Amino acid sequence: MASLKASEIKDRLKEEGFETPDGLAPVAVHEDFKKSSEAGLVILAMGEAYWTLVHGDVYVLCVHDARAQVIREELEACALLESKKAVVEHSCYQEFQFGWGSFLAYLFLVIGIFSVQARYGLTDLGRVDSLAICNAAEWWRCVTALTLHADVVHLVSNLVAGMGFAFFVARFFGATAGWGLILLSGAGGNLLNAWVYYPSSHFSIGASTAVFGAVGLLTGIGVCVALTEPQQRWTLPRWLVPVFGGFTLLGLIGVGDGLVDVAAHISGFLCGFVFGLIGTVFQSIFVCLQRQRIWVAGSIFACLATAWWLAFSAA
Image (cartoon, rainbow, N blue to C red; front, side, top):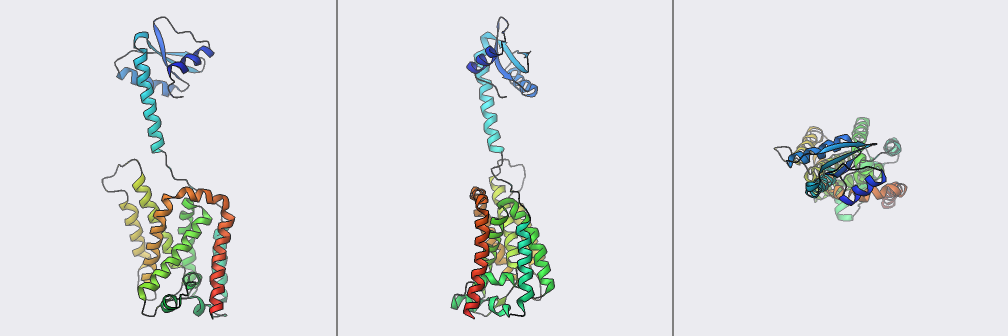
């Protein structure tokens, strides 16, 4: 219990039948001996003497009656400062708990589409096509391309990496909202990638743009949290660590030779980074969305279904 004001101390002790010794006045009441000792150190720092009297389950700090008012004011000021410090140091960010349903849905969705991809010619229908997106406004390709893969190795790598990074994103935004942000980052990355290549013809498929969108989301989260942390104990700026980590990870697994679409990876990362910064600032919104996660999940599936419906309609 924190130090109480004079009137509160008086009422508290009166209720418990405590009698103050002659010449002394109570200045603080604590249920915790450690808190009582800390208050005593404050009194000693003022150059004053104090007595700790045990009454039932509380510790009563008494001082000379002539100095009681000054000491009470000092203890109240210290208690107020401590409470403000506790509010500042308490993280304003919430960590979410979630099940594995959304991860299984991602697994079945991507594997299911891959199993029928060649049979129904989905690659041509849904791949990123810079000319079709920029000239014909076939925006749905930015979404459908995320569900297509070139081969089994491509599929498995994106499944493993996607679920791994999505786990950490979900811890900060919740599972359904986290997957929604990853989808948005991937689609935004594909759109940006098409714009980068335009007016040249460019094709690409794969969930890796969304995977690197998740990496960007985590980097954006790290930067925003580092900038808003109340305690600064490092010589280097704390925001530099997540930025360096994000770009290192991007360089290690996002840039390569052969069929690796470097521009798509970078585009997804940049979109995710922006959404990560914005989402972290407004994390309280995602707390509210937890109550509407069924609707959020439905919206994600509706977006995917609409994109594929438009792809088939345009064929």
